[in-house]
Amino acid sequence: MLTELGLNVTAETVYRCMLSHPKAGVTALAEMIGVPEDDIREALDELSGLALVRPSTEYEGRLRPVSPDIGMEILMARRQADLAAQQLRLEASRAAAAQLISEYAELKPSASTPGVEQLIGLDAVRDRLVTLTRQVTEEVMAFSPEPVLTEAAIAASRPLNEELLGRGIRMRTIYLDSVRNSRHSIEHANWLAGLGGQVRTAPSLPTRMVIVDRSTAVIPVTGDNTAQGAVVLTGHGMLTALCALFEAAWATAQPLAVAPVCGPNGLTPQQETALTLLADGHTDEAIGKRLGVSPRTARRIANDLMERLGARSRFQAGVRAVQEGWLPTRS
Image 1 (cartoon, rainbow, N blue to C red):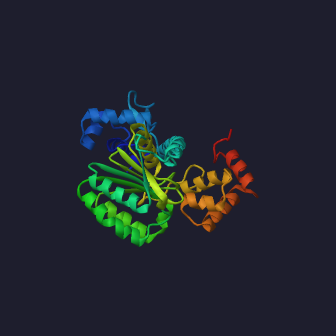
Image 2 (image 1 turned 180 degrees about the vertical axis):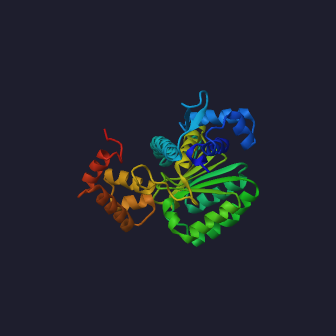
Image 3 (image 1 turned 90 degrees about the vertical axis):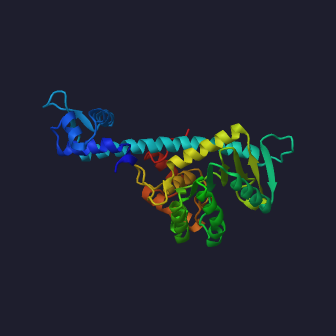
C-alpha cells in the first residue's frame, strides 16, 4: 500500500488498473474496479495533482499513467520534502517549548501562581500521576526519554496501562529510538499495541512529559534529576503549546514496528540528530544523553559521521555537513 506516500486506497487502485489497462477510460475503469465514475474522476484528480498521470498524446481527453519507476520517485521525493518540512516545524516547536519549560519549570510557585503547581520529591510526583491517570476520561500523551525500559518499570506500569486501555482511553507514547535495541522494550510495545495503545520512537526528546486530557501536563523541574520534583501545568496557553509540541513530535516519530526511514542524505533520524548536536559542539556525553545511548556509542556514531564526511575534526564535520546539504546553513 502507498498510503504512507500520500496516495489513498482508491487512487492507488486506479493507478494500478491504468498501468494494466492504459487505454481504459473513466467508464471502463469504474466497471473494472467496481466504484462509481465520480470516485474515478476524484482519484484521477488526485493522481494528476501528484504527477502520476498525464494527458495522453494519442487519445485526446484521456490521461495516461506515468511509469512506476518515475512515479514512485516522484512520491518519495514529495514525501521526503514533507518530512523535512515537518522536522523544521518540530524544531521550531521544540525551541518554543524549551523556552516555555525553562520559564515555568524552575519557578517556586506560591498559591497565587495560576496554572502552576510544584510537586516536591518523587513520591509526590508518582502520587499525582496516579491520581491524574485514574481521572483521565479521553487521552494520555507522553514523552518517555528513557534510554531503555527496564523489566521492573514495565511490570510496575502494566496494571495501570491495562486499566486505562480497557476503559478505551487513547494512549500515545513517544520513546527514544534507543529502546529499539531492547527486547523487553519491544515486547512491552507489542503488548501495548495489542491492547490498543500506540507507541512511536524519535531520535531525541526535549523533556519527560505527561499530558492528560489536554488539560493537565506534568514535567520535571530538571531533566537530569526527575526525583527532585515536577511542576503541574494547567494554564490554557501552556497546554496549547505543549500539545502542539507533542503533535509535532508524533508526526515525525516512527511506529516501533517500522524501521526508521533514512533521509535523502542516507542518514537515519538518530544520525541526523547526532550530526546536529555534533555541529553545535556538544560532547559525547551530552550527545549520548540526548539520544539515550552511552557516551561510547555516541562517540562511535560521531566517528562514523566524520568518516562519511571525510572530516578530521568535529568542526570540519559541521562545515562539510552544511556544504553537502546535510544540515541547514547556519546564520
